Image 1 (spheres, helix red, strand yellow):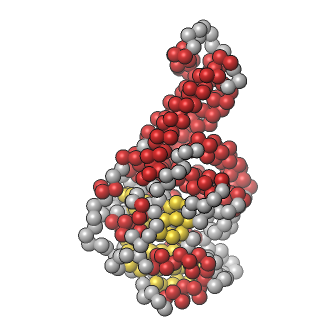
Image 2 (cartoon, rainbow, N blue to C red; image 1 turned 135 degrees about the horizontal axis):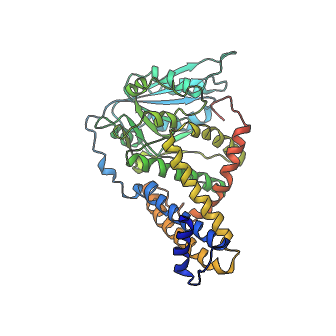
Length: 392
């Protein structure tokens, strides 16, 4: 009854001859409700990024020492190129722990050569076992055990910081008893539609989890740019709650360990890390399949929030295209789409400026629509593809 009443009110605003309830009218009601839901979602889940002030993160005058942990499996090329950018950070006291996790390429030699130059680089090696295959979580635990400082930062071997001030910006967020620091792990801009799509996907995911953290409701982070304290890790008994899952060393740990008081974010341009996006769709699909395996293990409120957001988006586009087939609702559908496009462009443009993604808002509705088509494929493929290794 509510949908019919809402349809009658909203539809009659544009079409005064609303005298009966039929398929076009019901579709118009669904369209109007989903439009309102999408716009509300923009304001609740994305807009907080736009007004967040980086200067609310006070200068940490003590400059507490930090341990940076990087897990590497067959990463000789990436370590050769990117590890110096980590080792030369402008920070008074820090160490870099590189966990050589069963690599069979030249990874170990690359680490050893850099260790001759940088005193703050430490190598931890995990040997291949014929009977027990280690996960990334095991590598992280070994890395944490080898650290000497309480404040920990994590990134990946294929990531590089925006500049030499990344560590400063991330470390400053460990203030006022904050135990978790969330940063933005972006993908480097390159040519091609796939690159832009991957960047947009990562951008939207970051908008949602960073905005949630601003509101004191953090539910995930990404291992490309994440920090937490060693004390918190041991207090949570490490990854014991989800060790049986291959992935989740980042998002599930934050999902279970964060609360309204212990989580901070660092959103300065200097605090961003960049990764090289996958070059082929099949490689990206395998990466997303692994990432999506953790979503079912989020707490119920997080799953409901994410699910309702996707529901509104699907209902909006389905009802929009359906309304285009009816002469009486064609203009109505276009007006609703223009309203959504306007709000989306304004909010995404403002958020993009905050995260140094100034070009993604321009065709956001196109990337959003493509992702809505692709995501069910990823979820279906995830059920068929069982990865037995953390790097895929």
